[in-house]
Image 1 (tube, one colour):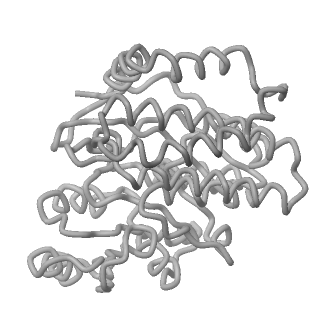
Image 2 (tube, rainbow, N blue to C red):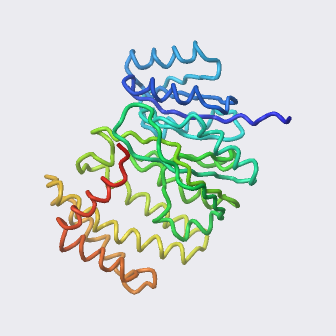
Length: 325
């Protein structure tokens, strides 16, 4: 039997001593034992830093990297520079994973010769392991270029996925305050000849009160505009006019989502940023003539612009349906 390839598991940690034990319990308990677990202590306090060191002392597969605080993107980039695995996966330190997540992804990666394998993550408010109902197994294949054509529907988080390490050659996370996952998605997918999708649920995203998906509006939400601009430049540099146009449409709609969320959260600084949003709306107004600006998107823009509270009700209901209690 051939030796199974080493998988690097990258976990940024910043003062997560409350949540790290469950995360590490599920990572160390993986049925795929060939792991290199990189705990990147991103300038945590003494208690959390010591906890990371304790894991390294207990299990030889754990490596701890202590560094000054610079955010999750910088922490991941540091680990990417030091990893030795043939494949890599990412786990957030306040989340946890199914015992067979890595094995599920790696079995498909090896059997199908995939550059990237992705599964399904669920959102939860529970801080304990619990069984989830699995759907009838479904496996699909695609190319990175095909996925880019429908990027707005692609789940951008770097979890629950496993990547061939070569995808990160010359590529690192943009060090934005948030949305670093979205920022690296396009160049990663561009490199993928084969992507495999399984509908198995194997990643548990913990929704704390401070989670981006639950937190009140903040200035860092504008980082997504930087991501759209980076994507636009990437497509332009590679002569992908159609993908550039699709991205511009998504960017245009997102401006109205930001405006809507500022109103719903009564963000006190919103008046200072409305001119910036209005300027980008004018620059992108040409997308109204795009074939990708569909009737559905026209309705969405209308509701976001003129009926923000109705949009808010829809967003809340949709979000609640995605939470597994």
